[in-house]
Length: 287
Image (cartoon, rainbow, N blue to C red):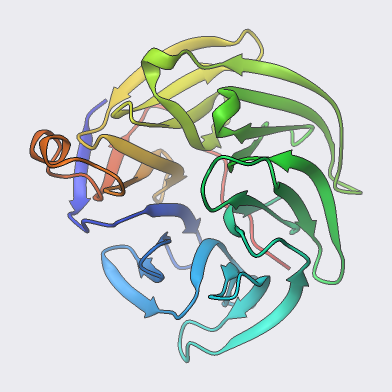
C-alpha cells in the first residue's frame, strides 16, 4: 500500500477527517489555523479553534469548538453561510480545548477535551445526543482516537500519552460504556498513537504521530498486522472514504517540527490517500 499526496496543505495541525458519503466529500480541519477544508478546498476560516467535526443529517456539520477565553461548545455549522449555532456549552477548564470526535451509529457525537500544554490529565470524553451531554471519562491528558467495532458492540479509545488503545463494551441504545480493558499497547518505536478508524474486518488503523506511518492492528489479539509509510513525520488521523469505502485518507501536521525534520519530511502537513484492500466503517452522521 502506497500513500499518495492529494493536497500539499502544509497544515500546522491537520486533523479530524470525516467522510460524507451523501456528497462524497472529505471534511477535515487545521485545528491551530482554525480552518475547515472540503477535500483540497478551504471551506471556512473561523475565529475559534476547531477540534473536530462530523456531518449532520440536515446537511450541516457539527463542530467541537474552543474560543479565545477557553469556552468549549458543540456547534451547528452551515457550510453555505458559515452560520454557527451553539448546541451545547461544555463546562470545561479554560486551559483545555476540544480535540478528536466522531459520531456513533445512533447519531450521538462523542468528543474529548485535552490540556493545551499536553501535560495534565484535565480532559474528558463526552457523548452528546443533541439535548444532553454525558461525561463518559475524565482524567484524560490528550483525548484522541475513537472507533467502533463493525458490530458496534465495542468502543475503542486512545489517550495518547498512555500509548494504549482501550476497549469498552458499548451499548448503542444508551450510549454507555463499560468494562474497559487494554486492547493494544503501542511501543515507543512506532510513534505516538493519535487518530484512529476501523474496518469491516474488525481491525483498527492508527495514525502514528512522530512515526511517519499508519499502523493496522487486530484489537482482539493486540498484534500489529501492517505498517503503511506516510511521507510526513506526524500523521495525525485517518478515515475511510471513497465510493467503495476502501480509500484511507490521512491528515498530518507540521506543528513543532524542526528545520531538519521539515527538510527530511517536506510533505508534512499534507493530506494523503492510501488505497487499501479492505472496506472501512462509514463516518456516521449527527442527528
